[in-house]
Image (cartoon, rainbow, N blue to C red; front, side, top):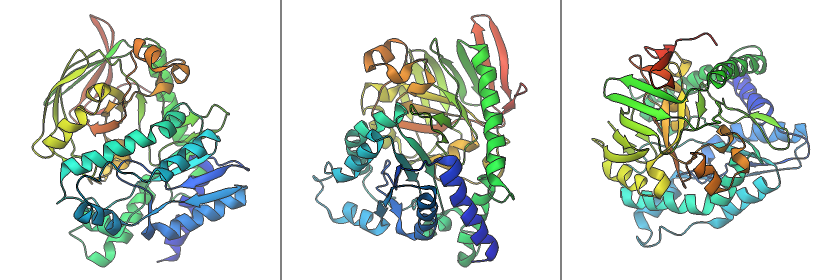
Amino acid sequence: MSSDFEKNLDKYAEVIVKIGLNLQPGQRLLIGKPIIGINGVPIELAPLVRLIVKKAYRIGAKLVDVMWEDDQIRLYRYKYAPKDSFEEYPTWRTDGAYDIAKGGDAMLLVAARDPDLLSEQDSNLIFTTHKTFLKYNKPAADLRRKGLVNWLAITAPIDRWADKIFPAIPQNKRMAKFWDILFDICRIKHEDPISIWKDHINQLVSRCSYLNHKKYNALHFSAPGTDLTIGLPEGHIWKSAYFTTQSGISNIVNIPTEEIFTTPHKDKTEGIVTATKPLFSDVLIENLKLTFTNGKVEEASATKGEEYIRNIIKTDDGASRLGEVSLVPNSSPISQTGILFYSILIDENASCHIALGNGIRTCLKNGENMDEKVFSDHGGNTSLLHLDFMIGSEKLDIDGIIEEEKTEPIMRNGEWAFEG
């Protein structure tokens, strides 16, 4: 690799440790904490992980540990394991994540996978493994959602993923192309990316402040195939990926990030919404269309992956209701690449999106201190899962509803209609 690549990789690791995680002296750091469908860091990413570990120890971390994963081993399970064994899970992984969260330490999630790895496998088995993970991960996830841990989700290219995204260019140039784009969308190529990131977060926080001052009762989304009204609970809070833990550590939970978001009222979504990008979660879902009544999905269809999405909606009572509404301008750097990345972490930051499942407790006043019943009574949704899908485009208009007959423009043609 070139010297420019090495410099950018080092700056990426610096941003991850100092801005994303904001790792503190004396903290432990778990890298590769399991997420849906991924039990750790692909072994291909060892060079980046080593840089992160080195920087973490130089800051003063008292222990850094890494969970690794190999795609072929993951595939062998689907090919050769007994079909009645997919409710088994290596609980030491989620136990480790719980221990880190309980101790107020730090977690780095690395979302990188081959989108085609499981393309020929039974979607019902994939759903079973996802649901099993969610069950065992719930204790750690609950602590993370309550703000006990500074955490960050990132990504990085691996070979088969680059092959999927750039089939038209020579194979020996695909990884370099992917890294180059990733450095761009993560604002790494600047001389001082840490300063650039601080400015970017300030802009997102300013957008949040505007909407928090407005206190809209609901949002109305209008686009081809979409006529959707999402009610907002009293006391809802707009946030960016800039979070502060209960112990006072400020960090950024996603890199890249372009979104501002809040939690909807679980009972107040009405209408039809059509996804504008495919959704990928080990299973590809294309042309997703949902109809909501009284907050709940009443009809679901997709030209591909329909069985999987129907299973998702039946995961639990909250899986058929919304837990997030997120706004992203169509002019975001990720959208402007024109690339479908087959990664929710990246693709959700190219487009306005909504999420089925668990609501964001920190987006409701005092929500992180509420038990499930009180959170529900205030309009918050509770579910094992949280699944984002993209609904934004250059044809999307969004209005904020102040009261029944009074609205204000928030977005027009996919772009902000107010100054941040």
